[in-house]
Length: 262
Image (cartoon, rainbow, N blue to C red; front, top):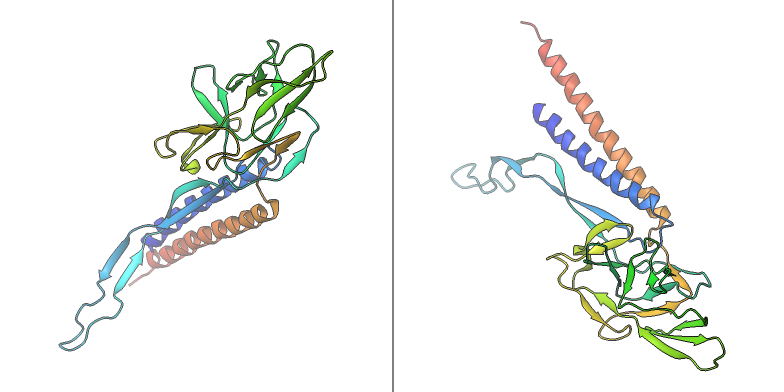
């Protein structure tokens, strides 16, 4: 009975992690470039009371043994980098990536962050930046007298300036890819930095070497499926309630034992 109290407690902690992860997914259902997370669990070690194969007589052995589990624990929260739905915006600096890859941003501390959020803008210096003012890398400057901006699927940026009819190429957008994107570290604001687990960034032009292409005038929305998240939320809630019921039942059994009289 004492064992069941601690076992059920580990189950409640695990399900709380599940609910926390699901609630974060739901809260970001409309966040541009957000990638859903999935909580993963494993059972804890077992208390072996009798090993399988133990002799039960001179000619027979136990076929299964007796092992009592001690609960569960969270092992990982995995990011799922599946493609989100595209939303057309009509903004010339909005970009979505079809396939693998991340936009590169220059952080204030000099490090590079990676994001799938392609909602870009122009700052006072003409540089392409995100909503926080972090510059897109490689840096591209938009001239003041631009009347039209075109970004090709290969990342080539061309503009038409006032008084001209021919486009002028002003830059090339490069994307970054990783061997293991799930190993990226989340900074918040839809930004990631690389880790030893993710590997170093592999940069290149869109459409080459397994890197996805760019679609102008679109943004990639969250890949969260609300129906799935609501189902996971209900499942986690019911499992949490079931574990709490185990604690209540174990406590009642202990009360019965403590109330025994000679």
